Image (cartoon, rainbow, N blue to C red; front, side):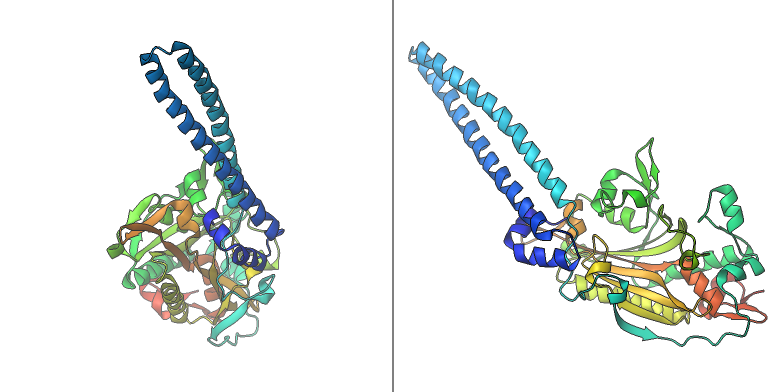
Length: 423
């Protein structure tokens, strides 16, 4: 969340940043926030002055009574009672202004980093790296939604029977391959210095607010209404909230965590070529890396996270590219995001498999996540990335590695899976 102090001190920068993210009426929203804060501060001053005058009267009343000036003391009592009534009204007005200001501020997205490209949609994203060669598949090669039926490794009909559309059942070597990828991705992160965590997959409202998922994404999350809990969209949310309302030691930074969780997405799109099969699900598995860092270190660490994700994709032998997202295609909370896409040879298109982002102080301000330096507290930067999300990785492995006699696993996964080939 942007602070009102930052907005007031950097008004033009804020308006330009919000405009780059295509926020409607950015200037009006910013000026409205400043106006509310001005009225809030004026009310706060009037309340402080009123309370000070009432306190001063209280002291004088005692002195007047001691001097025998009862009438004067009674008059001052009445004036003090009026001041206290006024203070109660001002206190209510102040709370209204504070609530109104918070309501405005929580609706403002994070500002994009200066390096973020100008653009409105995915077509305007900037390709910053590309590697690997697209495999030359045999005639009759199939997309993964046909392959999973052919080899009986993922069953959408069973998932639909048990739950509904978008909840697949992984079977036989499909289930074992899922487990192999999870363990490989976790081990790779641990080897890179991340501490493994296993968080809850249900969160409360405070956790959703802390990472910017609430009030922005209520419709995208499954809501357990009776307990007012939400199923997590990614492990980023519970992991980052571990550090909510804390002051970290500078010597402990950066904090590096990794977690595997199932993830849930209520809004998974409509049926069609772009969302068919494993391309877009309501429930999916993902390994997530999270870092909490000092502001001056965060962008170097972001590049390290990008390199880590790239190393995973290179080891899987998948043709990939990295995109720097433009302002119009970025998330509400992100300051800078790199998307990773793998090329699906059977579908003949790019599939997003990871996003790696720096949120700067946007989440930390909501989380009250700070560190102490030179006897002062400062907000930290939060970062996260998919390393990796499994469904589209599985789809790409199945499609790109298919041969007439079966599907061959990437060599790095064979020790984890316990087999070399499906079929």
